[in-house]
Amino acid sequence: MCSIGLIGFSQGFMLSLLFSMLSIFLLGVYLGKNAGSRPIVYGFIMVLAGSATAIIAYLLGAV
Image 1: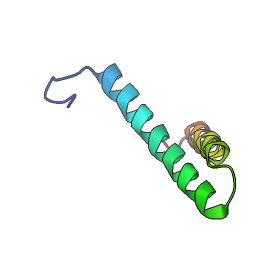
Image 2 (image 1 turned 120 degrees about the vertical axis):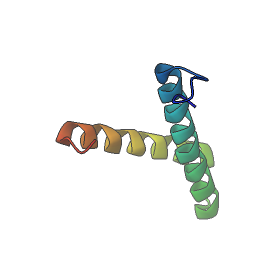
Image 3 (image 1 turned 60 degrees about the horizontal axis):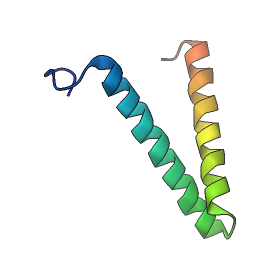
């Protein structure tokens, strides 16, 4: 959408980040329900793990 001018680069980046974190959170909720644990807490743990992984990959120069 950025390449055809519908939204700016920064808005596209923020939307991409939001959707990525939302899908990781929903995956955590799903896994928490299947494990019989607290789904919301499991979702937040997954978001923290995903954020830590992204930061480490950035610091190592993989991105």
